[in-house]
Structure formats: C-alpha cells, structure tokens
Length: 273
Ligand SMILES: C[S@@+](CC[C@H](N)C(=O)[O-])C[C@H]1O[C@@H](n2cnc3c(N)ncnc32)[C@H](O)[C@@H]1O
Image (cartoon, rainbow, N blue to C red):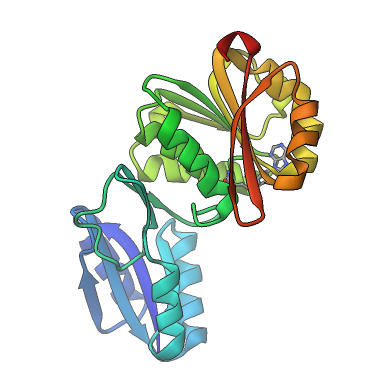
C-alpha cells in the first residue's frame, strides 16, 4: 500500500474529495496539522497507482505527493517532513507534513519544486543571520533563491520586500508558488534575470550559492548592498572564507558563523562597521 497526500485548505477539501473520487479513490482520511492546513490522505494499492494519481493531480495544480504506506520507509518520511524550528520565532515545513503545527513559532510552508527547505547547514547559517540581524522594514535580495526559503524567512521576520533571483526557471517558479502559499506573493518579486540586470540597492543581500558563484558574482553583490546594509554569503567552507572575503572588497567582514564544515560570512560597507 502507498498513500497519496494532497495538501489543501478547509475550503479546498470538498473539491479535493470530489476529484479523488473521480480518479477512483474510495477511502480518504483527513488530517488537520495546522489551523488552516488540511491534508487528504488517499490509500492506494501500489506505487504505480500512487504515481499515476500524483502526476494527474499535480498537472491540475494540486499539491500532491506520494507517501509510503507504512514500515521503515514511512518512518523515514515522517522524520524527513518534520518541521524545522529556528529559535523562538520561525519554523519551516513542507505543506504536506503531517506533523502538528500547533505551538510552532512563525510557520512558513514550502510546496513542490525548487531547491532548499531550510535543513541544509549552509541555509541554516543564513537563517540564523536573518534571525539576529533583521530589524524590520528591510528590502532584501535573495540571490540563488532555490525555493525562496531565505527571502520568505526574511519577510516572516519583518523585512518589507524581497527580490529573489535564480538562474533556474524551476527555482523562480517554486519561489513564486511558495510566496503565494504563505500569502506573501505581493511582497516577493522572483526573476530569472541575471544579477547584472537587477537595479537599486538592498538593505540585506543573502547568497547561498557556493564559493565559485560568490566569486563570479562578487562585483554585483557588492554593488547591490545599500549604504548601511549587509551581505551574507554561504555555501563555502571555513578554509575558503578569507579568499571569498578578499573578492568582496571594499565590503569588510562583520562576522562569520560555522556549522560542521560549512561557513557563512557577513560583510558590510566600511562606514557601517
Ligand atoms: C544551494 S542552493 C540555495 C537555495 C536556497 N537559497 C537555500 O539557501 O536553501 C543554490 C541556488 O543558487 C542558484 N545559483 C547558482 N549560481 C547562481 C547564479 N550565478 N545566479 C543565480 N542563481 C544561482 C542555484 O540554481 C540554486 O537554486
């Protein structure tokens, strides 16, 4: 047995039930892991049937995923869909997570596609910087947005607007969908435009893109930091920090964080330091 999980809302539940019925599903369980989140769980005979249903539902825009029906695979799934909490103010979880959101601070949900769910150390390091440094009202540039997770976290912490860029169309699309999922679409502009085409200046620039891309994008990253703003780069190793900082002059290092072999460096224009 396998299970197809469709993430919806109280208002969307009747439509999802009807559609699953039309697709031949007989029994549906409903889980309510959050105030507004509803999950329709449809048990199906095997993984082929689950795949058929999931593909059909996704083609219609539904947030549908295939979940193991039981055993060790289900335990692994349950662990991998556990919400991630950052300090006392922020949590990130997949929309289809069955874990109870009650009591979690500032829940952001992520949907399908893109890259990055907050679990990777290089992302966590930047979320920690956002938690400590966002004061409210900032204009944020999320470079290499992946899923938009960093920009959405910044908004949840009080930033005002986000421009999110990525060279992959899937990442840009996922960022738009994730912004809408969290009611933040009016404050997020996601684009595949190269960084060189982004104008203006940002109070916060975050870039979890790895050493090579940081070095390649360094002049643009420096240009896009507003006076009084800051830049945080991640996806680099501790031993690469000095090299990366060298490329990001005239910005100067404000601080750095490490987690295992990963490091993130925060820099700012000299007058801010
Ligand atoms: C490690 S993922 C980070 C995703 C997300 N920001 C996070 O922290 O979880 C890196 C992302 O940067 C994007 N990327 C890599 N080089 C880039 C470049 N030169 N310009 C824009 N995006 C880039 C990749 O497509 C990928 O989505």
